[in-house]
Length: 141
Image (cartoon, rainbow, N blue to C red; front, side):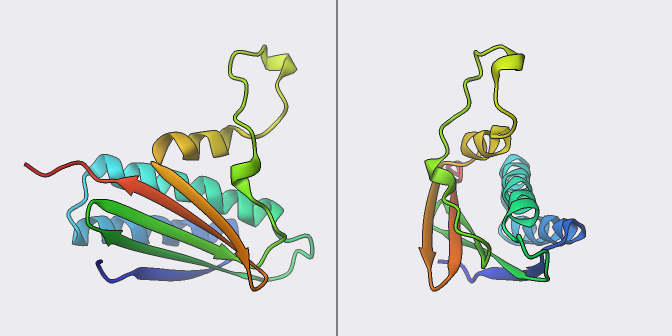
């Protein structure tokens, strides 16, 4: 397992740029394909935007921890926050065949996260949400 890269963010949208920088630096250091870096950045942006927008009803300052690591051919991103409990794995996939007027608002970001990752795990422990995103790296010739 490669050493983890970690960033601690405040729950403000302006902090998302730091996550992009972390993923880009991790991708360069580990020679990750550009598409993997793009997919992971996109997925983390969606997850973190939702945490920032919905997890903190008190509107106070909170910390969100993002960790990146690699185990063999699997890239692992962990997002940990102390917001209200929310298990994104319980959210049903959107009905993309329904007419736009009949679709509920929201849910497409999580659908996108599911599409660009290869696995998600969630746990709530010690007052924190922990979401783990996994992305399988392509085989190297």
